[in-house]
Image (cartoon, rainbow, N blue to C red; front, side, top):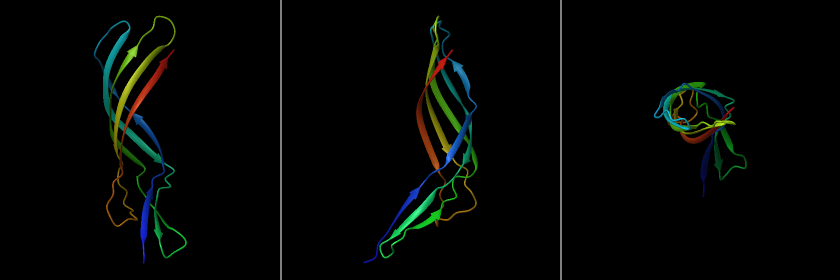
Length: 130
């Protein structure tokens, strides 16, 4: 009996540079809630992603380079937060942010199917302002 299993290993470094516009919902002396949104430029580095095939009739795995994502892409970011101003000591900024990234496809594919990498993230940022 013959068997084949496959897995995909996604491994790359990415630098994200968001350009956000902020709309303040309040102008309180202590709490200042806001919304922000805008584009985000992503630059990808050190791509070592691969597809790994394991055959039941072989001792070694077959590893094929996965040339995705491409070097850069441009997507969007949106979030909401609150700036907590303090009279003495540092101020705090709490923000929840949603990122939607669809990486630009490259022209070199090692897989028979078309695949465009896409990832979303929901993050909580806390910034201390001195």
